[in-house]
Image (cartoon, rainbow, N blue to C red; front, side, top):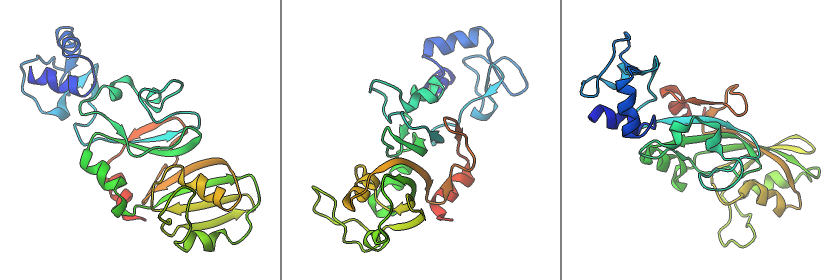
Length: 234
Protein backbone atom coordinates (compact mmCIF):
# COMPACT_ATOMS: atom_id res chain seq x y z
CA UNK A 1 0.00 0.00 0.00
CA UNK A 2 2.96 2.34 0.49
CA UNK A 3 3.68 2.16 -3.22
CA UNK A 4 0.05 2.91 -4.00
CA UNK A 5 0.09 5.94 -1.73
CA UNK A 6 3.38 7.15 -3.19
CA UNK A 7 2.08 7.07 -6.76
CA UNK A 8 -1.26 8.61 -5.78
CA UNK A 9 0.53 11.47 -4.01
CA UNK A 10 2.30 12.24 -7.27
CA UNK A 11 -1.10 12.90 -8.83
CA UNK A 12 -1.43 9.86 -11.09
CA UNK A 13 -4.82 9.01 -9.65
CA UNK A 14 -6.68 8.24 -6.45
CA UNK A 15 -5.43 5.28 -4.43
CA UNK A 16 -8.27 3.21 -5.85
CA UNK A 17 -7.31 4.20 -9.39
CA UNK A 18 -3.66 3.40 -8.75
CA UNK A 19 -4.63 -0.02 -7.37
CA UNK A 20 -6.41 -0.69 -10.68
CA UNK A 21 -3.27 0.34 -12.57
CA UNK A 22 -1.39 -2.38 -10.70
CA UNK A 23 -4.09 -4.93 -11.47
CA UNK A 24 -4.01 -4.00 -15.16
CA UNK A 25 -0.23 -4.43 -15.29
CA UNK A 26 0.37 -0.82 -16.25
CA UNK A 27 2.97 -0.25 -13.52
CA UNK A 28 6.31 -1.87 -14.22
CA UNK A 29 10.00 -1.47 -13.47
CA UNK A 30 12.56 -0.05 -15.91
CA UNK A 31 12.97 -3.49 -17.53
CA UNK A 32 9.25 -3.86 -18.17
CA UNK A 33 8.61 -6.36 -15.37
CA UNK A 34 5.17 -5.93 -13.86
CA UNK A 35 5.18 -4.54 -10.33
CA UNK A 36 2.70 -5.29 -7.54
CA UNK A 37 1.34 -2.97 -4.89
CA UNK A 38 3.33 -4.62 -2.09
CA UNK A 39 6.67 -4.51 -3.95
CA UNK A 40 9.47 -2.43 -2.47
CA UNK A 41 11.30 -0.64 -5.27
CA UNK A 42 12.97 2.76 -5.54
CA UNK A 43 11.12 5.66 -7.11
CA UNK A 44 13.48 5.97 -10.08
CA UNK A 45 12.81 2.47 -11.47
CA UNK A 46 8.99 2.74 -11.50
CA UNK A 47 7.24 3.17 -14.84
CA UNK A 48 3.59 3.84 -15.67
CA UNK A 49 2.72 2.82 -19.21
CA UNK A 50 6.45 2.75 -19.86
CA UNK A 51 7.04 6.34 -18.68
CA UNK A 52 9.20 7.29 -15.69
CA UNK A 53 7.48 8.96 -12.76
CA UNK A 54 7.72 12.69 -12.16
CA UNK A 55 10.26 13.67 -9.49
CA UNK A 56 9.36 13.14 -5.87
CA UNK A 57 8.68 16.08 -3.54
CA UNK A 58 11.07 18.88 -4.34
CA UNK A 59 9.83 19.34 -7.90
CA UNK A 60 10.54 22.66 -9.64
CA UNK A 61 8.69 23.18 -12.90
CA UNK A 62 9.25 25.90 -15.53
CA UNK A 63 6.36 27.18 -17.66
CA UNK A 64 6.39 29.71 -20.49
CA UNK A 65 3.11 31.37 -19.55
CA UNK A 66 1.11 32.95 -22.39
CA UNK A 67 -0.87 36.12 -21.80
CA UNK A 68 -4.51 35.46 -20.96
CA UNK A 69 -3.95 32.79 -18.31
CA UNK A 70 -4.55 33.31 -14.58
CA UNK A 71 -2.27 31.99 -11.82
CA UNK A 72 -5.02 30.26 -9.88
CA UNK A 73 -6.70 26.90 -9.39
CA UNK A 74 -10.18 28.33 -8.78
CA UNK A 75 -10.81 31.37 -10.99
CA UNK A 76 -12.99 31.10 -14.06
CA UNK A 77 -11.47 31.32 -17.51
CA UNK A 78 -8.11 30.00 -18.62
CA UNK A 79 -5.80 28.91 -15.80
CA UNK A 80 -2.06 28.20 -15.90
CA UNK A 81 -2.78 24.71 -14.58
CA UNK A 82 -4.71 24.00 -17.78
CA UNK A 83 -1.35 24.08 -19.57
CA UNK A 84 0.00 21.23 -17.40
CA UNK A 85 -0.93 17.54 -17.25
CA UNK A 86 -3.82 17.03 -14.78
CA UNK A 87 -1.61 15.04 -12.40
CA UNK A 88 0.34 18.17 -11.49
CA UNK A 89 -2.78 19.75 -10.01
CA UNK A 90 -3.40 16.61 -7.92
CA UNK A 91 0.04 16.26 -6.31
CA UNK A 92 0.28 16.10 -2.53
CA UNK A 93 1.97 18.30 -1.35
CA UNK A 94 0.35 20.72 -3.77
CA UNK A 95 2.30 22.16 -6.71
CA UNK A 96 2.02 25.93 -6.27
CA UNK A 97 3.02 28.86 -8.44
CA UNK A 98 6.10 30.66 -7.13
CA UNK A 99 4.64 34.13 -6.91
CA UNK A 100 2.31 35.18 -9.70
CA UNK A 101 2.14 36.76 -13.10
CA UNK A 102 -1.06 38.70 -13.75
CA UNK A 103 -3.40 37.45 -16.45
CA UNK A 104 -2.06 39.78 -19.14
CA UNK A 105 1.64 39.13 -18.44
CA UNK A 106 3.52 36.38 -20.25
CA UNK A 107 6.85 34.72 -19.59
CA UNK A 108 8.76 32.70 -17.04
CA UNK A 109 6.60 31.16 -14.32
CA UNK A 110 7.83 28.65 -11.74
CA UNK A 111 5.91 25.99 -9.79
CA UNK A 112 7.11 23.96 -6.82
CA UNK A 113 5.87 21.65 -4.08
CA UNK A 114 8.89 22.50 -1.91
CA UNK A 115 7.86 25.08 0.69
CA UNK A 116 11.44 25.93 1.66
CA UNK A 117 12.44 26.51 -1.96
CA UNK A 118 9.35 28.64 -2.57
CA UNK A 119 10.17 30.80 0.45
CA UNK A 120 13.79 31.11 -0.62
CA UNK A 121 12.72 32.44 -4.01
CA UNK A 122 10.01 34.89 -2.94
CA UNK A 123 11.28 36.07 0.46
CA UNK A 124 11.95 39.84 0.35
CA UNK A 125 15.41 39.41 1.86
CA UNK A 126 16.44 37.14 -1.02
CA UNK A 127 16.60 40.16 -3.37
CA UNK A 128 16.32 37.76 -6.29
CA UNK A 129 16.29 39.87 -9.48
CA UNK A 130 13.40 39.49 -11.93
CA UNK A 131 13.65 40.93 -15.43
CA UNK A 132 10.68 42.11 -17.50
CA UNK A 133 10.35 43.29 -21.08
CA UNK A 134 7.75 46.07 -21.34
CA UNK A 135 6.03 47.49 -24.40
CA UNK A 136 4.89 51.02 -23.61
CA UNK A 137 2.06 53.19 -24.91
CA UNK A 138 4.18 56.34 -24.91
CA UNK A 139 7.87 56.96 -25.70
CA UNK A 140 10.26 56.96 -22.76
CA UNK A 141 10.99 60.45 -21.43
CA UNK A 142 14.62 59.67 -20.64
CA UNK A 143 14.60 60.23 -16.89
CA UNK A 144 12.88 56.99 -15.88
CA UNK A 145 16.12 55.06 -15.39
CA UNK A 146 17.51 57.51 -12.86
CA UNK A 147 14.22 57.66 -10.96
CA UNK A 148 13.79 53.88 -10.85
CA UNK A 149 17.40 53.46 -9.67
CA UNK A 150 17.11 56.11 -6.97
CA UNK A 151 15.29 54.04 -4.38
CA UNK A 152 12.93 56.96 -3.76
CA UNK A 153 10.00 56.14 -6.06
CA UNK A 154 6.79 55.79 -4.09
CA UNK A 155 3.87 53.95 -5.63
CA UNK A 156 0.33 55.21 -5.16
CA UNK A 157 -1.29 54.10 -1.88
CA UNK A 158 2.02 52.83 -0.46
CA UNK A 159 4.17 54.24 2.33
CA UNK A 160 7.53 52.61 1.58
CA UNK A 161 9.62 53.58 -1.45
CA UNK A 162 10.66 50.94 -3.94
CA UNK A 163 14.09 49.39 -3.84
CA UNK A 164 16.39 50.55 -6.65
CA UNK A 165 15.58 48.99 -10.02
CA UNK A 166 17.53 48.88 -13.27
CA UNK A 167 16.03 50.15 -16.53
CA UNK A 168 17.47 49.52 -19.99
CA UNK A 169 15.87 51.30 -22.94
CA UNK A 170 15.61 48.98 -25.94
CA UNK A 171 14.01 51.67 -28.10
CA UNK A 172 11.58 54.55 -27.53
CA UNK A 173 8.65 52.32 -26.50
CA UNK A 174 10.37 49.14 -25.32
CA UNK A 175 12.24 48.76 -22.05
CA UNK A 176 13.88 46.04 -20.00
CA UNK A 177 13.32 46.47 -16.25
CA UNK A 178 14.97 44.45 -13.49
CA UNK A 179 13.47 44.59 -10.00
CA UNK A 180 14.19 42.77 -6.75
CA UNK A 181 10.73 43.05 -5.19
CA UNK A 182 7.36 41.59 -6.02
CA UNK A 183 4.78 44.19 -5.11
CA UNK A 184 1.30 44.03 -6.59
CA UNK A 185 1.47 44.87 -10.34
CA UNK A 186 4.78 46.56 -9.57
CA UNK A 187 6.16 47.02 -13.09
CA UNK A 188 2.89 48.36 -14.46
CA UNK A 189 2.54 50.74 -11.51
CA UNK A 190 6.13 51.96 -11.85
CA UNK A 191 5.52 53.06 -15.43
CA UNK A 192 2.14 54.51 -14.46
CA UNK A 193 3.98 56.61 -11.85
CA UNK A 194 5.96 58.28 -14.66
CA UNK A 195 2.89 58.86 -16.81
CA UNK A 196 3.14 55.85 -19.09
CA UNK A 197 1.11 52.71 -19.67
CA UNK A 198 2.35 49.15 -20.18
CA UNK A 199 0.65 47.63 -23.20
CA UNK A 200 2.43 44.27 -23.03
CA UNK A 201 4.63 42.71 -20.35
CA UNK A 202 6.85 39.64 -20.46
CA UNK A 203 9.03 38.19 -17.67
CA UNK A 204 12.21 36.91 -19.27
CA UNK A 205 14.38 36.04 -16.28
CA UNK A 206 14.40 35.15 -12.57
CA UNK A 207 17.85 35.27 -11.03
CA UNK A 208 20.08 33.63 -13.61
CA UNK A 209 17.29 31.43 -14.99
CA UNK A 210 15.66 32.21 -18.34
CA UNK A 211 13.20 30.42 -20.59
CA UNK A 212 16.13 29.39 -22.80
CA UNK A 213 14.03 28.79 -25.92
CA UNK A 214 11.09 27.09 -24.21
CA UNK A 215 8.09 27.72 -26.53
CA UNK A 216 5.11 29.68 -25.28
CA UNK A 217 2.60 27.46 -23.50
CA UNK A 218 5.17 24.70 -22.95
CA UNK A 219 6.69 23.45 -19.70
CA UNK A 220 9.60 21.37 -18.48
CA UNK A 221 10.87 20.01 -15.18
CA UNK A 222 13.88 21.92 -13.87
CA UNK A 223 17.10 20.08 -13.16
CA UNK A 224 19.90 20.79 -10.68
CA UNK A 225 21.57 23.11 -13.19
CA UNK A 226 18.41 25.21 -13.46
CA UNK A 227 18.22 25.59 -9.69
CA UNK A 228 21.89 26.62 -9.58
CA UNK A 229 21.29 29.23 -12.32
CA UNK A 230 18.22 30.51 -10.52
CA UNK A 231 20.34 31.61 -7.59
CA UNK A 232 23.56 32.40 -9.44
CA UNK A 233 22.43 35.62 -11.09
CA UNK A 234 24.51 34.69 -14.14
